[in-house]
Image: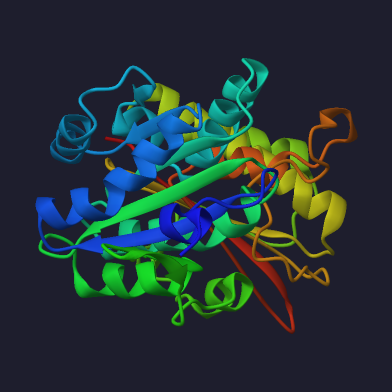
Length: 322
């Protein structure tokens, strides 16, 4: 077995994405320690973005080698998936600027407590295959089969092209092409949408007046003000997108409770068929060309869902204010 097959390494300028499903810490260490050790031997920075239990086990296995960098899981896997992608891109860019040809990451997601949160992180795992593809990262995502629910474990198999086991790394026969996987994910209902909206505007004629009306409604919502302000900015960006890229009429509905805010914006434009949209600026590093609205919204809101049908496109934003 060659080194790449054994350790999960890949082309120098491309991302590799492996899943390691383990039943015990011993199984975790047996499968993941060679990945860490071979990275250190090659002079590659190794990042552990995991829970404390996992990090401690791997550090002990490699005698706390100085080339291992601990990154708090909460700092990397923020509550927003687009923010986590940006964090890994910046991490890789930092190490490359310091002279590294490649970095290795052992990641362990906190999938949250609700089905809604779990689906968001399942989406993230599929998106990573595209969103990090140009970055020189060898990634191994670890999944505790004793703690995680079956849908998460099934998603792990569907979203990683490589499997890591005690005998090495090998192609994953259960891997699903990411765009297909993303298109087949369900969009769960928001319970607030079953209640009367705080604001319901059809066929928007004055976008400036509507923005003021949304801001006035959100000003009365109880919750962390930074989160409310972020939600307002995301709503503004999506309204601008609907006006600029969609087709009339544009409708907006806004719901708010003490714990959650939801906004649904619908236009009658032709839409787009890109399940990876909004997980990075539309025009890459050239931010002067714009194309940042959806990317910003994904970083500012807990959930951003885009659906379309023969009549148009609907963008739904949702944020928990606690």
